[in-house]
Length: 548
Ligand SMILES: Cc1ncc(C[n+]2csc(CCOP(=O)(O)OP(=O)(O)O)c2C)c(N)n1
Image (cartoon, rainbow, N blue to C red):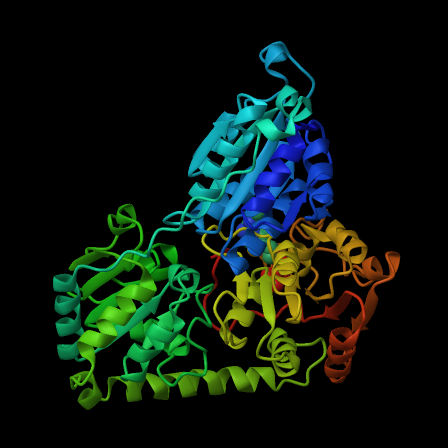
């Protein structure tokens, strides 16, 4: 006969579900959950801010294809995790937030750290619930873990009133439950596949589009069969690498022409949202025939006018389509469509290469990104965050495997870059992990370098320090130079944050120093910060993502 508390019951259920790492910030009433997790043999990553902890968990879950679990305290601890819930659900990343709350007997009375947490969580989550007794912890956790990854992944919130966490019950009365079975991935309707195969076979200018759902489904091998037929494809920022970027049908570098001129488009596991111009003119041609494949039927009712809507797993549907097209001659192979796009890719890449060859001081962001690209091994995990630097990184940094690249994603949430890199490193510890961050983006999360040092995770953090939010451009454009700077930031010595906790520090202010500094950082036996002074007046060659 032995008694255990609610925290230990929760930890046992997490372990039974195959979760070996939890993230969080130590706070009441969840102390027993974190201690219980450690006692059950899970790695407990104590972070410096709930937002960072929850972003780490989202990335860990996304890379591992499991729920990423974060434990937060009541009131402001929980509300600090609201942004990551929103980002996870909008961006289809699996996040389970376990939030402590006030004891039920004090609810509504103005208890310490009281907040209407279920209300805060609801719009950012797929599902929310409150644990109503210690005995139901295993059952409710199993539901929460299952719903987090079932169908389209996203955030789930489970509220733990204080008395449920602390209460001790007989261990034998609350056994851990076996995880819910995983459903077989849904197959596409064969008639719909036959129709889309026909569209693709006859199209003069077909285009495949890969969204994050394709990366989540590990659809790479099946999608490569389609790309091998000579069908050009583009990928959303986080779908990159599901088919390696060096495939000859990869045309992201001619994306505007590919989207704008295609006569048939097939989307696998992605949304026609702002990233793809809502699937409408002017980004797409009037009259384009669009087929969209998604796990979730609701996703097929959105901005784009669809010719065909298919509920299916991206990998299964890609296999069905590749089977349907096997042995057929595609009209596009005679039209020179891919050849034309490849010529544009080559021209655009030459333009980038010229910018990246710059020996100028201060350092061009293109030169910085080139040097990062040249030192990174193919298996690396990468995150990037910022405005100018993220755009340059997206244009120039290749991805070679599914879910190896993370960035601000669907919500454009700055502050994700550092915690995403930490979560990815813990999910794939053997692969080098590098975060390439604007100075603002780094600053939004930077105290978690202490976490990096404490847990001994070897992440290389490269700060593209252009002294501001998009460098000096916004400050000069919008704000009075006689008044206190708003969008321009100080040229802070960010590498000192590594020194403060005995990490590896590099400061770079000339292009020739970049390569050796990056190599030393990657070879270091600890985490590293490489603070690179980057030209504050450099702009992205074309367009801008977030700031207009
Ligand atoms: C959570 C959040 N806050 C604010 C913004 C608006 N925003 C977009 S980019 C950016 C910062 C860009 O500066 P930096 O990270 O230094 O990168 P740079 O553009 O200078 O390379 C901000 C604050 C946002 N997208 N998300």
